[in-house]
Image (tube, rainbow, N blue to C red):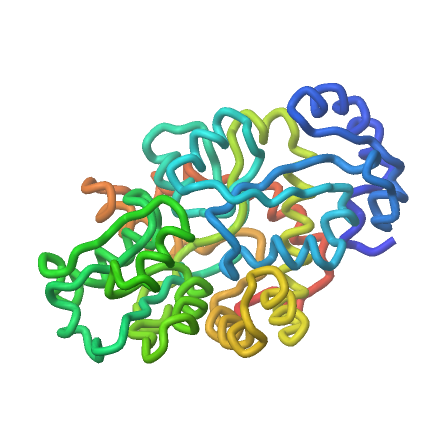
Length: 351
């Protein structure tokens, strides 16, 4: 049995099976043998059903699709459904229990800072991988004056980053941000000409560029010049973490193993992006190459990264947020335990 599969050992299986009745009540069902979990060979009835809500397919959360495609979720005894849910519905649904996890660390962190009972349990990126694509005729930042940029909902990380980017370049009052609730509406606003630019996750920006002849990428994640922070990973509700720590631990284990795979297998990961995100092969390779520098594999964010989050949150929430405040929005105890079980000393660092 591999070290990464040790989470499903017989030693913990007794307690895991005792919890099945409670899991079933929460929409999580199944209790197979430990060998089923370790090998991923168990049938659907042996897997625990888990739902992860995302705003749409994105390489920022690419480990989710890698884990699904490579059978890693099944290896950890999980049957994971990835649902598309608008940004505005993410926190309410998580708290209510409509789904068990979301991968947006920034969204969940700010919600926790506002008193919502949610917590981040894993970070898999050191940067929010947003980008800005613009229509033909816009060749520089100054050309954006008087223009409209489509982006995500007002509470989302892309919108906050767009505001910061425009403010940093002296355009805070001269560019209109059109906040829309779902990625299809955001992309359509750009491709139809309703908006002059699209500030969204890298995947959406690259794909939108391919649909508008003559459009160009005006800002990549690297161009945004953001300090390293603790970004996309896994967040859950405080109640779910307390009631089902084994399930949370298995999700973390699958996420870490999928992240390790993403770093070690660039071509295969790009192929998964192409298949799952509807990108062309070239688009998927471009997306992977631009996001890879920010993919990290470790148990917990560094204090410097959480401090960067605190500065960003302070600006977004218009009040002082300290490092200690941010730390209360994170609980990486399980992630640190799982990380030690992964035998990957040579790859457990920034790629």
